[in-house]
Image 1 (cartoon, rainbow, N blue to C red):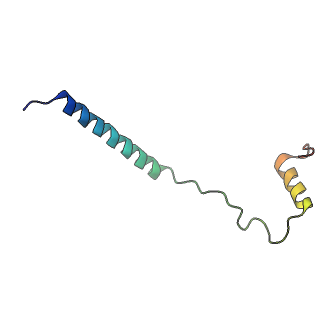
Image 2: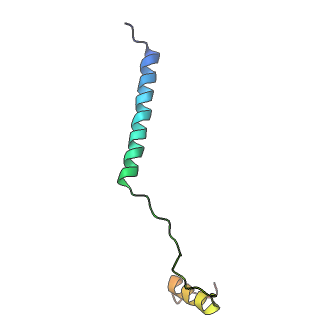
Image 3: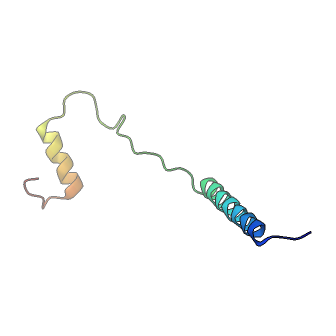
Length: 68
């Protein structure tokens, strides 16, 4: 039985592809999918006032923030 170079290279390519699939699957098992951030329930119902926006800016960027 003669083994052709073309056949061996194809088998190697198939193995490389399979290893990449296994690596991908393993990474999905190891790293839990990150949960997307949500504001649901973070803001009370009603209108958001200018004061609330300014307070949020101060909390986020600090007191030294001017005219954002």
